[in-house]
Image (tube, rainbow, N blue to C red):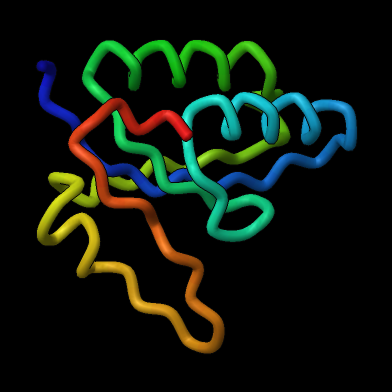
Length: 99
């Protein structure tokens, strides 16, 4: 099985049409924590595919997308995110985690 890394994906997309398309791509690869913030457990190949799809949907001149490496899905990848208020659970699994 390919090794996975947990990423935090956050975006600021200016155009409503591009926003919907970027949001759909994010849903294809991750689990929503908030509307524009996702947790994605990805192999290197899946990460490259995600970046390609996001780049195709966004305007690199107007939009901003951040991908933050949180480490392995177990351990620090879970513990380094702190919530205030309601915490949405992030599923823990050793299987493919494209939720």
